[in-house]
Image (cartoon, rainbow, N blue to C red; front, top):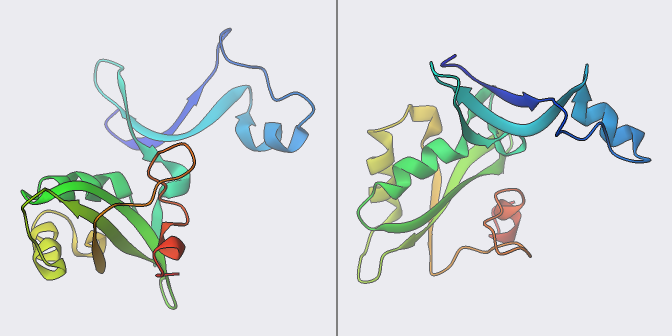
Length: 157
């Protein structure tokens, strides 16, 4: 309760496994529990809030960063209409925090201003080292924002 962790589920409404896919079963099931790949936190009343996807967590030199946490701060900036935080490769740290934002119509903001806004609201290691101001953030085939591989798509890989 109150701590972030992986969401696991089991019950009669949960599949017992993937048909003819032992590798997927081995990675997705542990002692009858289905590992959803989602990260979340349970409150005092037993309600779970999803806080992100485990595969999207940014590992910056051993520090684990939830991109959704940074997204929420970016979205509090008055000029930001859309934001996505993602990992970009780093020679020494493995991964570094980056973000892409789309500004509200008629608004202006520079990378440094946005970084400064974020730095007052999260720990220093969570502040994006790069903030790209774009007209549009690239989306995947399903129309969703794709954190994985975004650095490469934007020329930061």
